[in-house]
Length: 62
Image (spheres, rainbow, N blue to C red):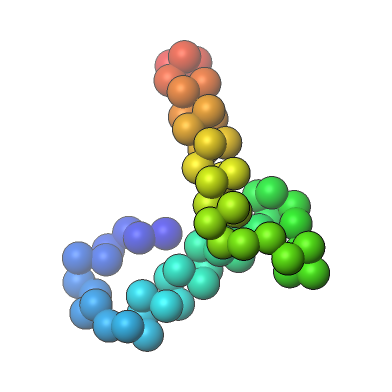
């Protein structure tokens, strides 16, 4: 997602768009909806743990 970001000009608006997109992707990964009312810190904690497990497992395969 961040490919070619070295050419971007870092603004508050672009940072907000990227963080919003990241949260949307994390919601899809965990399969929760906005009506479930989970906090962003909870969501990040859940996806961070699952991503670490996936990368550890992927290292074993190669």
